Image (cartoon, rainbow over all chains, first blue to last red; front, side, top):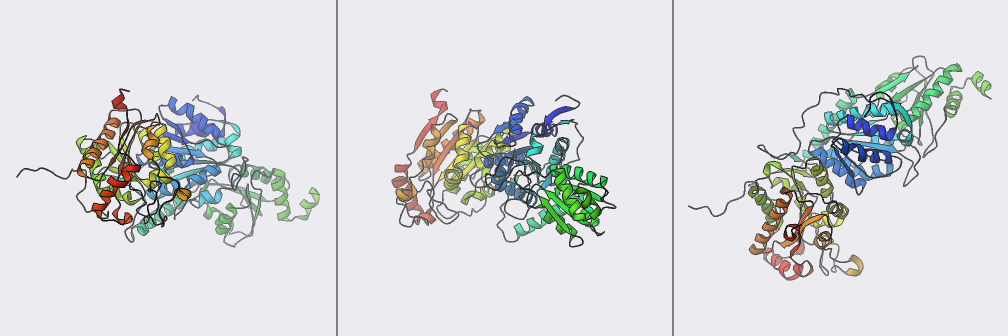
Length: 360
Length: 250
């Protein structure tokens, strides 16, 4: 990969970033709008002497990730919403077996086969675990192609550090959009040795990677241990950006590409004299509840904007805990709000007659 | 005193959870013996399925993983592709391999994954309580075919070994039975050969189907179960080598 700035679409850029982050194996199945990842990796992974495999299904893809991860390798897959649904069984097993992995979801419209337009409709699925059982995955919500690139190293590091799955939650816009990006190898964090990995029991006791625990109380104990790990992640791994919230009468909360639209709308609102600010969760799990709760200590309005019928808004409400009104504006399944749409909402909600008059 | 038989070290010295007369214990021992005789314990990784043999790692003393129902060939693929110098085997029952995991085994075989698959066919789902498997015999009474399996409703016993043997991606497919000492000796040869091919780097998947007993859900005493393999099962699932590239000079 050449140094300096290059123009790349998000799907290809995230593939290159994964290679830079030291991915050993990529397993994928075609689905729009993330096909560029699979195609890109089919070319680049063999060039790097790494494993690329086009699988027979998303079920196979996530289980190949499981197999490679169980031997201590850095493995990933990518897909879009319907494919991610199929992977949920595997992600639950990864959580139970405490195997690190990275899953990229370039979200499209649902439910069902839905469409191939950008969407943020999989927030619930990603942030609640997604499959069966009491578990969590890290969820990163990048908003630019550069941030998508930068979050791949973090995704693998978090996965390895906590022996968890990291879901990179992008959408069709981010996957398809071309932006200038730079690739920079960062040192990454210090990671524990994978002394649990299956490598062949040469001169040592057998290693077992499993998620079945039948003896009474054992699985309950494992669940408590998982929860402890999740609490630690909530304490240490939250990433969140905010701007102009100190004096704000209204704070708009959004993630991913929606946050870019919000940023534009807030800037325009400020220009019109409305005291607006924004908060952008970068980690969707762990969620920046503390930051939002702190912002709600002063009475002001919260507006959550999503490319969905309202999913993250529930987390914002939980964080605000009744201290302030939380309102929602969003469009699902390919309906993309414009800066003007969001600005209109801000103006309506702040109910300043001067602004309303000016705009009519 | 002269030792004429001893437990192979990779087969753990413990009591298994299997029912009296079950074939899993025999099959586990054959794998452990092959691993020890080929001296590959230090580089072997095994995959346990969902089914009665889910706890195979409690008995076979190699690095092992337990995986989702039917997905063992995909997990094996992920392991072998990233660790070509390791010996990867999966151990799957007929529900695991021939029902829920049909897609995974066919595609792993078709890609020519260099793995060894030990497939236990006992014509029934054991762990869940004796329901019909794809390999259940016509007329066989199970929890879900209470008047016997009928083709109109349930189709035919699935011949996995035959299906896989026609794929160019398989290098070795043999069906054996665990129904008598002579049959078990032949099964041992087959299991060992399947591992040997992988060690030699043969360019494809090897599978040994083992006809095995389930006295509990066949509702038969163990000895009668062994007889039932000989008199009934082998008629539908004929024994023998269906494919071996080392015989054809390929």
